[in-house]
Image (cartoon, rainbow, N blue to C red):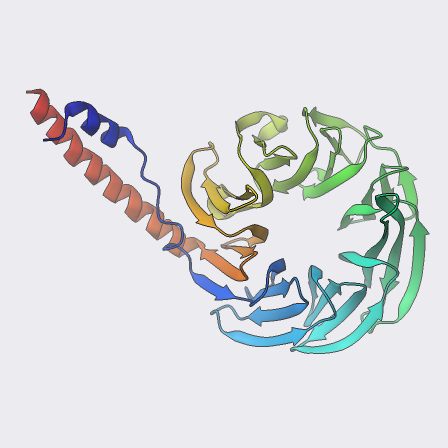
Length: 356
């Protein structure tokens, strides 16, 4: 007979749902996944470490694959065209065929569509100095004609197209470029990341500062900010693996510590999806708005993720692409909750019987 103390432990233990069983789609790219995009038709576009670009339609069927020149860094959709930065190149793909490709100076990094033009950034890394020495901001027409290139000394770490084209910069100037004008932000620390929020662009900095595009400091942490995701709140991942969730007026609602955050996103039902990596294995953690962990899944290294209104997708070192869909996920979650409540009720009854 089980002792009452063991039963009591079992009753209050939280059984989380099976995250893999709740997945709507599992596919494999055949190489480490380096970039992901969900398009307007809910198709999944995955780019690989060795340059393979593949598209699955909204039902999970493979539409096409195409080999690009090198590792896919960024993916952007404009109409029927898919633009990627791949190694030293920017390329335009339509229906699985490369329409045009242009070579940049240094590695091709970020992509944005602004004022009817494709904007890409490139950077040159100096091994001897251990830093980025020069960057370029390139503008192309949709047909691949180069319209302009602006060379700067700083590497852009974030790009966003709104009323202005905004680029968050590293050393030496730091700050940000708004169209062609350089502006100082709330700190002279390098920009490490950024996110577009309802109140404008928010930057994360190497000194732990979060600032906005108006030059105001929002909050300061003790360590460098690695990435920020935004939906109805803001999830901030730190260099040391700390994760902080901010609500209205940047008030901290919860935080958690763990292994290094390799990728994270906010998705349907205001759930936060976090991929972590300890150097040997990875995990996916799913948390509610109050920080309560709903599920966890051991994986290979999570490399990239993205979300739209009712879909969340992760790409892994193993080449796997896993997608969760809102309605199926909620059914699994609710079913798990009902099962857990019934299970705990039975255990509680047995405990009361033992106590008698």
